Structure formats: structure tokens, C-alpha cells
Image 1 (cartoon, one colour):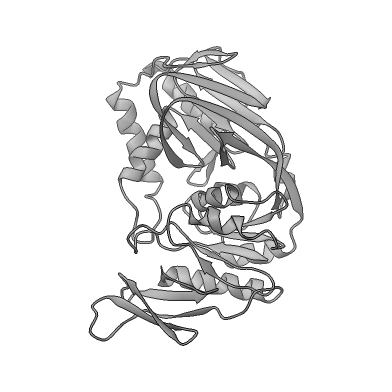
Image 2 (cartoon, rainbow, N blue to C red):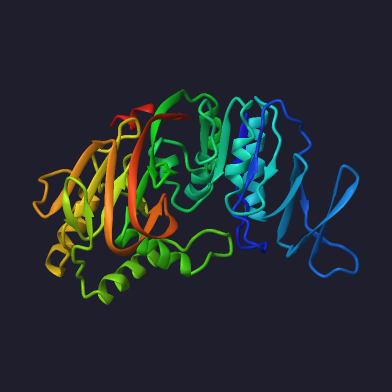
Length: 363
């Protein structure tokens, strides 16, 4: 089996948005130990691997080195403790190795080279999972171990939020076939958006990461959303055209339910969306101050009557959007930059995923 374990992205330069892979039929030489400076070199980590000394910049006394599969990386103490707990649970049933990613998008490259693996466990946040999904081969089986801030996919599938408990649950979980979305070819697991929510993702990213490598919490998202709306005086005019629907202020595209979470509360933006179906669309035609409370209430409550000033689409194979001017685009909370147009496509029956609570796929 294979697993991906995330590193603290704030420790190394260039940034390591990364993790580790645990692979069935691989060797067991996974080592975690204190990151000690090498003699004469300030803040250079020293670790022995196959009798070879390797050095890594920016290791501090609070960090640990994790070694395996010929690769070495630094994680925070808390991260190593969680990794060790996950490893203990999985190693009781499968042979494991740890491969640490070294740069953004490296997880996609690693996933591409794991065609012989029985399963791929992803230990990290939704962004790391997104990287893995964009490198998977067709027959891959994926297990999601929550190691990020929001962990939308793990929570939606009924995976326990404690990583060790999640590992135990996934070992006996059935594999379910699900669909994935694509935005201009980029795969996404649960949600994508163009306009407002993508701009919010970008603003929060600009705040930087916390000391544990995660994004700022829900308070930061709420504050940035308030500032974004205040800066526009609560108004979003139609700035894009959705083929077959009409002009809208922004577009939210869901591949599953919920769209995301605000703390412990699910955002029910597209309450009919399901992982085994196509894409759902929610696109306000115009946003003005008087309708903002209604839209927020709908996002938390879901269901009920459909508003006449919002476009809805369910179980769609294709959503084509053209922008009046370049707008921000996000998938699974990852900023993809500004685009003039975007083609959202449903990739049905795309991947097998371990789901402890399979009923959540159809709830």
C-alpha cells in the first residue's frame, strides 16, 4: 500500500508542500529522530542514511527528520508524532516505506510512479490530495488521512479526524468509485470556483502559513471575506457568461457534498451534489447588500426554494464559462491564477476511494 505524509511547508526553501508515500512491498527502513546541527554548520541537519550523511537547511531543535525510501525531510515534532501513530497502525497490516516530496507538484510526480501499488494513502490536507489526484493512474485506490486544516474530503467520506483512528478505519473500508471534476484539465475532488471564492482563497494565501504549515483558521477566512465584500460595498455585478445559463457575478462548482466547511458546519452551497455523479453549479446573477444575508443563510442551510436570481445546475458533464476580464480560479482551495475562460468537466467513474461511511456518497 502507499501513503502520502505531509511536511510543514514553511520550513524549507523552496517551499515544500509535501509529504511521504508509504508503499506496500517496500522496505521498512523508516527513521525519525531529532534534527541535530552538523558540527561547524549553523542550522544544518545531520542524518545518516545507508551510511551516507545528508544535510538539510533550516532544521531547528523543534523539528524532526523523517527518512525513508532514500529521501529525507523535516517535519515539526507534532507532525512526526502523528506520522508515527499512523505508521504504527498501517504497519500492523502492510509493509510501508516513506517517500517525502521536495517541491510543489512533486506529489503528482510520485503518484505517477506508483502503478504497481495496491493503494495510495494520502496524509495531508486537501491541497496535497489534489496534487496526488492529478498524478494517479486509472486503477489506483486512494485512502485519505486527514492532516490539513479543513480536510473536506476526509470529513465528507466519514473518515475520523484523528489520523491514527483514520488509518484504522481505512484499513477495513470498502473502495467506492467516484467522479472527479476538471477545470481547464486540472482535476479537483470536491469544489472549484471562479470569481468571489477564488479571490478569497488568494487573499488568505497571502496571509502566509501558520507555524505548523497550515493556513490561517476560520476567523481569518471570515475576516478576509468581510473585507472583500466591504471593499466592493457588497456588490458583485455580472462579469462572466455561463454557456446555457446566462450572465453571472461568479460561479461555484461542486463535485460532492458539502462544498466546504466553516469550522464544524458544512457549507451546503450545492446540497444535491454527490461524489458519484457529475458536477453541480451555483452562480448568483448579481450580488447586492440586501441579498447577502439570504445567500449566507442558504450556504449553511441548503435546500428549500431556489432563488430566481441564482443559476443552478445538477449532475452536469460540462460547464463553460467566459469572463469579461481575467478572474481568479481555484480548485480544492488551490489558487490557479487568473483566467479568461474555464471549462469545467465531469470525469465520471474516475478513481476508487476508501470510504468508511459509504452512505455519505449518497446521503
